[in-house]
Image (cartoon, rainbow, N blue to C red; front, side):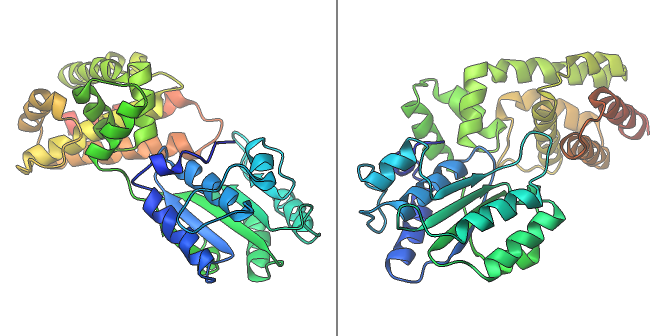
Length: 333
């Protein structure tokens, strides 16, 4: 479980947190919140903070939970009997039995004589039956029960579930906010922090991981191989450089490269994701027609979608097929 005492240290999210808690303090808080956010943006910290605030005995609007009362202590020690965390196991959907089990517990009296809070990570991971069971619970909520539902902004949530929730979208930090936060985490090279934020679409926690793993240098090596792949039109110039645990991230790097190539072709000089690779991107944009670049972008996005949505697939087969399509439809077509 994530500590919620750091919510005020996320200035791009804290104003949303304040609005939600103020609504509850004013008496018009909703029993079901749907939190939409990009991954690695602090959504988990926000949801845990809201859950603790709802349970806190000394809650005050627009402020973090006290952290000292019995309810907060139980929560922070991962042992609060009226807090229920639901998330999917790796490679599995959230089953209807899981939802029914929590629903049954909600129908009973609170063990702490207070509210009950359910935090569901990844609403999009519900099976159809589980989604229907959740919907019924949202339509007929038990007294003093609250739901915090979290989903990625890229995923679709059933309209019927959305209609039963109060929706909140968490913004990404600005580049200065992201750099300030990364400095608080112990990083000092401003240019590297800016590059890490841009290559991760301004997602601060992802940028932190990139800096820790040295992914800026890894990205440079990978995209240099993409250039060789382009020049030689040979799958083996790039395929061996894909790593099983890193393939989606590597496709993100390639997507950003192609997006910037499109901007370069259109003479757009703003909002580049790979400003540190500008010379290489400009050379690629000059050599490849804009419609071909766009076609390559679509192929890369389809590769990523296939890798993320199909369990137990042969990653190498999907990547090989995508690279062959890029050669045939972009470099040679």
